[in-house]
Image (cartoon, rainbow, N blue to C red; front, side, top):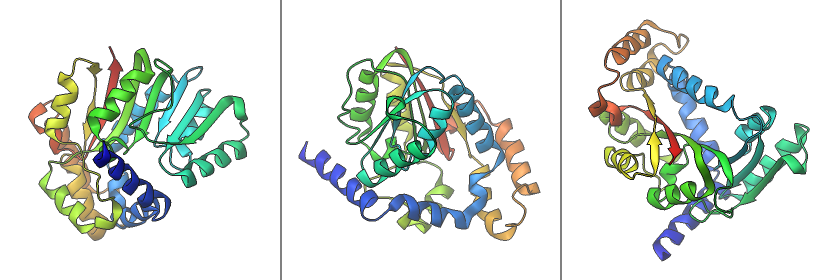
Length: 260
């Protein structure tokens, strides 16, 4: 447990004092096409379709950051709890919700540890997060998510994947865009989630070919994000869809987990 607490403390410092979130966005903007390639847009469209059903639900925004997703969920009619390791972020999230015209009965933000969520069992209809699980001890965090979700509740997380060798090069080139302890999800992680028996897994993937090509075209074709190389990569990626052995080689997974 001391090792886990040390990890949590390092993450808290990275986000509260070093603003790794801001540095990550700034560095990744140098590779601007990785934000907008076609299969990523489709994956985010799937996420949006689920969020459209959030009206009237109680939702946990795990790793809420500065509250952009939380405010979006409030506008969709959800009641939102947000938790983040950084009190700086949760203060900004609360200010953003108030500035958007919502009151205390519609949201609550707390600074805390996702390995020990301060919520009762079976509290939430939906849990959402973006790039948060790979900062955590995955087994502990998923156990907590399972506990706080209602039976039949859904967890949705966009997470980076480990195994694409070209993307490993990209991560090596941008070390300041991440914390010391974060690690993208591996094939073993995906297998462990699917085999746990706790979840019905309905995940989607993107970026097998498109993401490495997007890194290159961000430099050589920067003014043209909708370029022929990315269209060709997307066509090839579509042709390879459904070959599950290649799933861990994508850039992102949209983990879509329904609590059994």
